[in-house]
Image 1 (cartoon, one colour):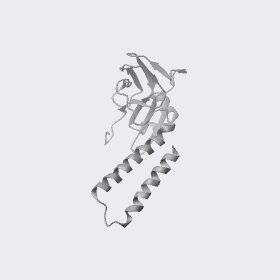
Image 2: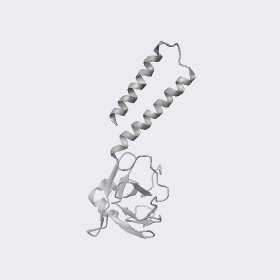
Image 3: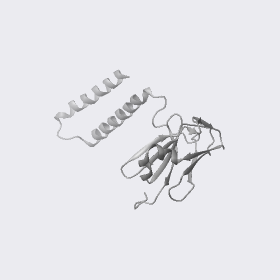
Image 4: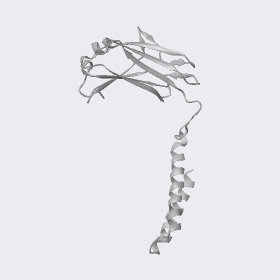
Length: 181
């Protein structure tokens, strides 16, 4: 593969060396030069992705896992509990990794991995087609860990597959702010 790239680059530099005596490039030479650059870019893309198991441009349209993520709170402002519901609405089974709970403010954010409740570890979780999973999140446990979390107005939950692919996320406002973004 490296030998092919070396030969390709030598051909590109030899073409530019032959064209140095001309006053200006003609139109068809610019098209060939652009075509060589595009081919070199495609070859470089495949060369970079050759070590990966899946190429970067592959988009599966038919077997794409679809997951519906819902996050509800028990009170309008300053809730004590959040309820995370993950529903598999796709045509394939999904292997869900540990959800990520993100407390965020304007300048500061804290991330926590949700492993389960009551010393029970639920994740990684295998959801078959049409199944749903509900997890109750007690926010007082997090506030007891770090008191500065009460000042942060937003909580976001990010659900992803075990492989790392993000499936969905939901955001909830915990308290009123001047800018609700």
